[in-house]
Amino acid sequence: MNFSNAIVQKPGISYSEGITTSNLGKPDITLALKQHETYCRTLEKCGLTVERLEAAPSFPDSVFVEDTAIITGKIAVIARPGDLRRRGEEKIIEESISKYRSLVYIKEPGTVDGGDICQAGNHFFIGISERTNHEGVKQLESILSEYGYSSSFIEVNHTLHLKSGLNYIGDNYLLIHEQFLNNPVLKDWGKIVVPEKEAYAANIIRINDYLLVAEGFPETQSKLKQLNIPLIVLDMSEFQKMDGGLSCLSLRF
Ligand code: CIR
Image 1 (cartoon, rainbow, N blue to C red):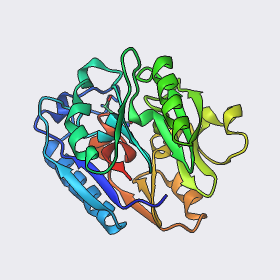
Image 2: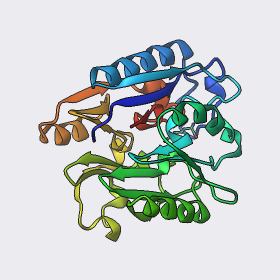
Image 3: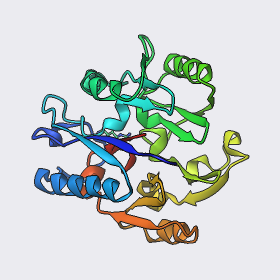
């Protein structure tokens, strides 16, 4: 996955009022800001130019910018968040993305969260979840095929988004939560499996020569080490509390 740019948005003062199912307690905003800054510097270390958007306190979840768009090499698709509390975040990001790509839009009644879309080379896995509906998938598939990309869809039942449980490592390998192990859509792909007890570790990001992984998941980490891709381990505690992972914090392209 060769990227040169990223867009991020700082967590705002209202961050702890965002949506969560985690039961891990309220996030500490000071620590979240520190972890966010470390994350941004890590993206820079991986070779990306990082555009940092100011916080948007009226949208507590807006730090999770990944959900607002799908940026491919050829086009950017502005998403339509499936949870009404997040509807409008996509408008904030639009201007920044329009500097790099032409924009197309997911339209009503379609809903798509970027966290449900996983690009693996020229193929896109699209999750159907509580946030991304069939109509959204239909629209997205049609846009992607117009630009020469293939896609397949996957039902997401055990996690918030597809990418909470399935991510592309590179070289036709996926890191998957065990819920996806026997999914026929994945039969031709190499798989490294994350056990339920380390479920959060399934969200990783491959950026150029590096693999970014969350701290605290030894079994997954030792499996990934065998790939001989340099790992960068980041403390994600304050984002995990709000159901967010490594991929959610940036748009990479
Ligand atoms: C939400 O529930 O929408 C946020 N609290 C977490 C979003 C995480 N985003 C992602 O997985 N792409």
